[in-house]
Length: 137
Image 1 (cartoon, one colour):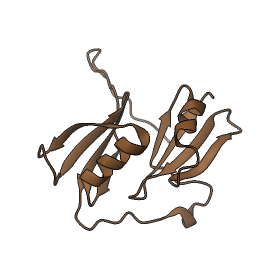
Image 2 (cartoon, one colour):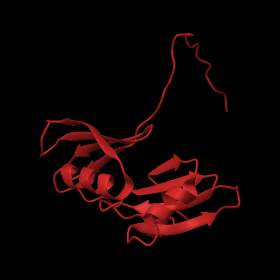
Image 3 (tube, helix red, strand yellow):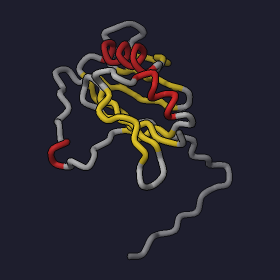
Image 4 (cartoon, rainbow, N blue to C red):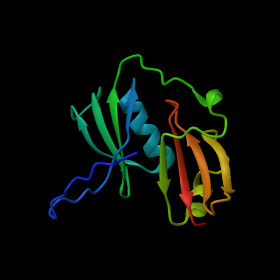
């Protein structure tokens, strides 16, 4: 397989990527992320609910949400039982973060040491999105 080479200007810097979640009630999703994981709303359209768009952040991690009335994310976990993630968040001090959510019903898998040497845990939000928090304990 041949890969095309593209030239890039020295003044181009790719800084980040943000996953975008479709949700039927953005305000409820924003509130859940704030209450359970410490995210903060950093922008929305319009400024007050009901939103058609919102952005939330936890440190440098951003998640964008788009409204789709009546949307229900398909549950595909049975098709890939070894894991199905929507976002992987790299964390320094993942063990300390885990202790802030340990025992809560949205924790899908506990803090576990993986063969590739990361410690990870998974949470599933009310809309069915799975976030993995991983890194050095």
